[in-house]
Image 1: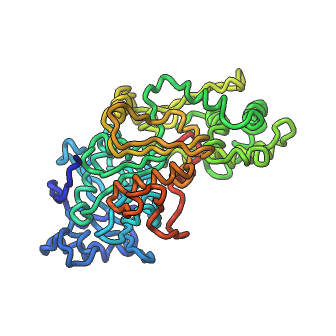
Image 2: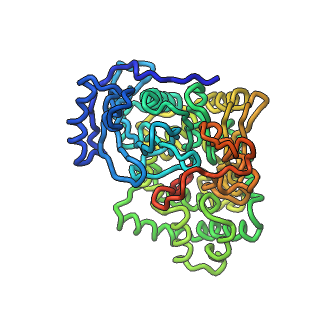
Image 3: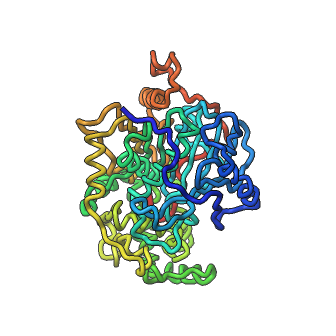
Length: 489
């Protein structure tokens, strides 16, 4: 039985601190009103305005509030310990947003596992349950980064503890049921959060979350690329890569000029040639991650007759020639650090490239500045995988049938209870519940409604009647998974 946590934070922290990055003109007003926490206001006091209740939480400050029809939307900063095991060793400001509907509605805890989009938006579970949404920026993504940055504190457990403290603080206000969700690295994040704090959430909905249990064994990806789509499409994609590497000299010269024009440098990856090849090798993966097979023959040029311009443009549109420049890598240093220390990363063979490839799939170490030490810990993902199979309760994993990251998915085991794995046929890295076949879509929607405590009587009687409770909203209902170039979930 999951516990209900209603207390506020036991750790006393400074009130009203606003980080310099991400602050707006509204921050000054927020700082002034933050004194409510000092004058006796309590977050549990339902008679006061929601903004004042938020500010009554120790360490919470409002950067700005924006008008959103049907909601109130806040950009917040929250004071977190750099090391949850030693909270007296310094703090940092972590950004989050709150899409507030009503304290009588369930709340969805969303994270992308990367930086924070500070524009209002609803994840799919938020639409399904017609609830509130808390969105968290993952630690060490700018500006939610300690200074100086002790990278050893960037772990999945520390991040899970960040979520736990935010949840514990806000549960005093949002006392109804909570779900955690995210897509890709965000789906991984929701899963890890459940691993370390299984009593917090009432359900988990993890989309296209890769599960690299053994970082040294990646044959599942090789099998995926050998069988995904039609042979005609696979051959066309392979042909672009082969021809690009054959024209390495001409295309590299163009990349050099492109870098000069845009002030790009390649210090971290080591050379322009390393960046060039990494981009070309990402091309096929990138196509299947974000595109549909139906687009293959119309969007991908025939390499046998393609001009240099056509090769350059198609690779740029799918893989992105700036992805491995220092300027492209720097925002994602936290991801590559985690991939090289805990998460693992794919290493696929791509036999069609033969001796044309000089470096193969390069490891995460090549994409992180050398002054940041890294050591891979094999047991971390094995522990999570074992826990999911033995202990998962009210967890849902939604995968894409044509998504390379879904080639190594989470699987349930004999200890799983009220948990499900679904695959959307033909879907890419944007797979969601809406993309499932009708019977599975209804079943998944019914589970989410039930976990959130808002399933209508008709749905409890017949799950085929399950539908999202919130009306569609074009401004808020954006894709949950942000498109990213380079090999990143």
